[in-house]
Image 1 (cartoon, helix red, strand yellow):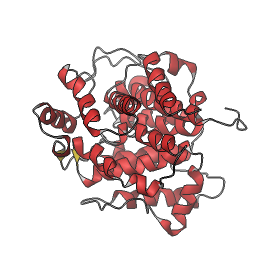
Image 2 (cartoon, one colour; image 1 turned 45 degrees about the vertical axis):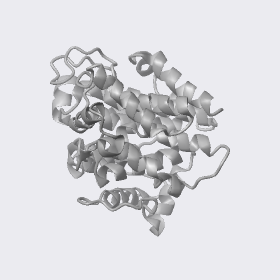
Image 3 (cartoon, helix red, strand yellow; image 1 turned 90 degrees about the horizontal axis):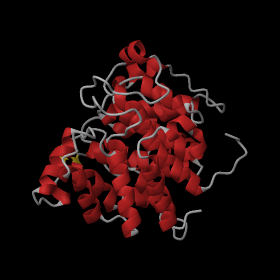
Length: 343
């Protein structure tokens, strides 16, 4: 990408949505394989693969996405239709794949399956979440909330601190994943997506590392301290100097952050470590997917960040054109932007 090019908010939002779907589809065939297993079977993952013989996705096609983009898309469509974050509608849209019997096809996790079963039986969304679940089910679908913040802040002001801690952030998480860890993970990722979309990511990191900490998080985590773990990562990046030569190796990241497992305490810093190391190249997405673990979600996290920072052009044509239901994805993103008159 031409470094002098000025990106529009629309291009960043479309890029972010595309990144969720592309990272999801790229990682789908190798989900839960180790880096060594991926290397032995596929080498380095740089294009869509068929998940032949996969425990969950055998028979699906190359370039197909899973629940990461599915629920991102459903939240985006709800916000577009309602013009705001309407939890009743978001809950209803989450039920669609359940009623179609498609949850296992999309690889939905156990916490989401249990929560949607409760919703289908008439449980209110405020009480349906699976108690104690700390998987990736929130970070994988929170991108539309970041886009919504940027949309409403074209014409009105709400501080990111107030926005991140407002009630619907808790509601979206606890509808399926009822734990402080899940809420925190969604808030942290949403916060940084907002500042990537705004083009001030490095500024915010610098402020955080100059003693402010993750001030936007009001909750406390009942088990492991996810904000503290993320801050250690950010400070290590910040100390790398002005040139941002963040030198953690693939093996170092894998070892430090639990092999990128589906436990969000591992997967969120794991994915951010790859992104911080190289924020402006598609090679970063290939790196994180080839590193193993919960590859579809790790890919969607990194893909969303690459797209939010660099726009659509960060993704090569073979990843865009080979994406399952590409036109629907682009329509979802552009309909969202049209709704809020985002240029």
